[in-house]
Structure formats: structure tokens, C-alpha cells
Length: 260
Ligand SMILES: [Zn+2]
Ligand SMILES: [Zn+2]
Image: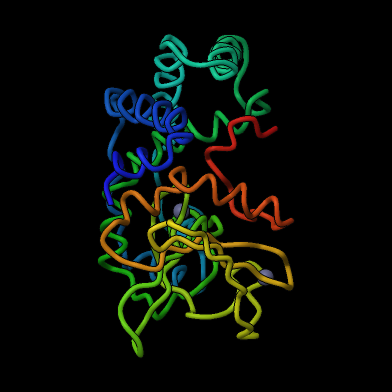
């Protein structure tokens, strides 16, 4: 599955695809520093205790340098031609940058989206090195080992009997292993099966949900199209289907730009 084929089948995603492409292109043009690869031996005890990398006191990242890059991106995006109400929201953010710091922004959803567009780039080499170092058997937790967020999506990989479920972070793009069954939002050891909503003509995407907490997990039951199908924004229509059924998105959505 390619992005273009997906968009041809889901033309209503085109506006979000356009904004996403514009922001990614601008983020690529901003000078983003590269995060240093941590000393894994130093971090290992925190890892075994369940402390995500970004929350560990054993690892230091230079977020001041990232902040400068985020501010540059906000200014760039605000000067681009954008649809409303995004254009106004971006100008509001720039106005805020000039008067105050962004501790209580008027558009936290938009700030979070633009912030992670930069942070994901800053962290990309670390996410890759962490994947190579991490023993997945020693994590198996319901939150992202890199940034601590709950999973935006899941993927079933491999063939039975060795089939695995991987969770995927909507913020930093880390993918990690979790138990094959059970709900990652209640995280009970109860292995109750999630119920499934199949969505027709969706190339292996479905919605798994929990009767106990009403949390849902968009799940890609396949391999080979991760870059398109695990991107989160490409399945925003599944979030709407889930919401219409009274289910709750318990992970942050970077595309909830009106979030307050
Ligand atoms: Zn993460
Ligand atoms: Zn649950």
C-alpha cells in the first residue's frame, strides 16, 4: 500500500495529508539538532524498572536546542498558506511566542503536533539505537519505552503460533512488543480478549476495543505497509467510527489540532 493509493481510496483524508506533508517538509528544512545516543549500560537499571528513556534521570537530552527548532517551525508554518482555522491558530501561536513562553498555550493540540514533528526528528537516531539495544522481553509494558505515551496503534506480525503484537507510539514513532491479548489501557493481567470491529475494504486495518474501559486500539493485521498504515493520520476515519460507537481514544492524537 502506498500513500497515493490510500489517498485515492480515501479522498476525505486529502486535507490532513496536505497539512501533514507541508509540516513534514518544513520540519525537514529546520535545523534540528541530533540527540546523542545514550550510554545504555547507565540507563539499563531504569529500563528494567519500567522508566521510559525520556523520563530517566540517567539520560540527558538537550531540549533547549529542540525548543529553538520548534519555534522556527511554528514561524515557518504560520507564514505558509494554510486552510482555516489552522492558519489563525498558527498565527496565534506565533503571537504567543513573541509575548510570553508557551506554558499555557491557547492551542495545545497544535503546539503538541508541531513540537513532536521536531522532537521525532531529533530522537530518530536514538529510537533506532534503542530498538537495537532493547530486550523486548524485558519491557512488555503498555506505554512507550521511549517517551512513556500510551499506544496510538497496534500491529500483528508474524504467523501463528509465534504471532506477536506490537504497539506503536503516535508521538515518537517507537514500536514495541506487548502481550498478544488483553487491553493495554486497563493493563490488567486478565487476558480478556478485545472485541473487534472490522472495517470493510481497509487493507487489514480494524478496531480492537475493550469492554471494560471502552479504550480502543486501531490495529494493522499485516506487514509491509507500516509507513502508511501505522502513520495514525491515515486512519483518522477509524477514530471517527470508534467515537461514534462510544469508544474512547486513550492515547494522545497529534491530529486533534483543536484540543484545548
Ligand atoms: Zn513514544
Ligand atoms: Zn481496557
